[in-house]
Length: 302
Image (cartoon, rainbow, N blue to C red; front, side):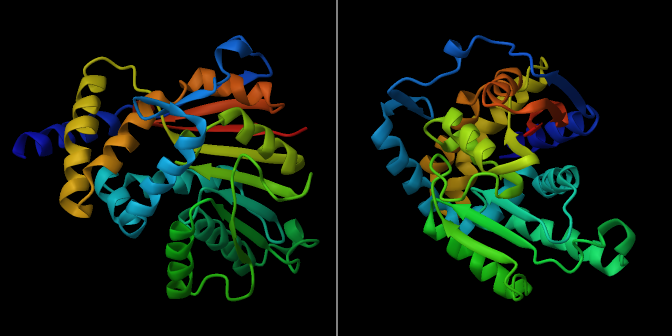
């Protein structure tokens, strides 16, 4: 256990010194589309399973981890996930009266930050900037396929006093087949969720469909580390420490083993940017945080 703690501290020391890297792609596809599309067999971590099985298996994982989801996020990232989500919302630049869709956000972490940001804007009384929207009805839709995750979010919202004005709408739904109308949302966020879907390209297509022209797509996801030595430390921490932590804290090693494996199966930063461009997003770029442990991808619907 001492070795695990030492490795984790060393990881943190390295990643805090690595800074941020932003890459822009415009509309250029970096990889042929044929390399990006999924087959009828899909991955569940390092296993190959039928597409029909994956949705059920992922559902089981998040049913198992729902009650400890936020605690484990704090432990696994040493609290850094809070800063990453803050960065995501700052890039979104929320405004009063917006209609926003947060997908795979069942526990409400991102939605709460968006509302806090909007409330700060209102408190500053920036009427010159937002005079047409300051009094408009803000609607933040939290969409998650797992009802257990949504229940956690609803409970947290009540405890924090969020959404009492009807600004939070909780929706059980599938990111690949959204129930929202075309051109209906000012913004779309998905944090640590897109790697768990069966067809990433379907999620991107749906995100593009529901966004209004000028709407922004933002995805925060654990990503690929290619820095020598740091990659080895990160792999050790991921595969040795995190599953053991899940077993100790949540009594569930297998679910956290899957979550670690799912990160490695997710496309690289460049490939995912290409998939976004293929879905129709423009001004596609990504920002690497802490050496590529996480990345925020963004794109506009024009």
